[in-house]
Image (cartoon, rainbow, N blue to C red):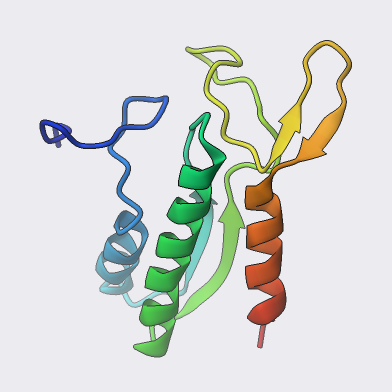
Length: 124
């Protein structure tokens, strides 16, 4: 679907739409099989937007679980700022910044946010 006029977009040009996680899980659940979220994240230079994306996305995941959808796991994309095939190192997806000169890794505030959410909601 085209990005609506005036919508916030990510470094990849996708719409900032954290509600998509809940929507996709509900639709996929109609297949009647267990689900595993393997990539949930976004490319942004603004870590506060990543935090908001995580919070809203996981709130939707909580609602899905409360409704009995069999979601067995969640993996955030990605731990580290990585190489994106068509765009090189420009999009920053990671919870951890990688300095390309020194290879030093620095956790972002979004890493602390996701860690705090995980500690607050341990697996069953």
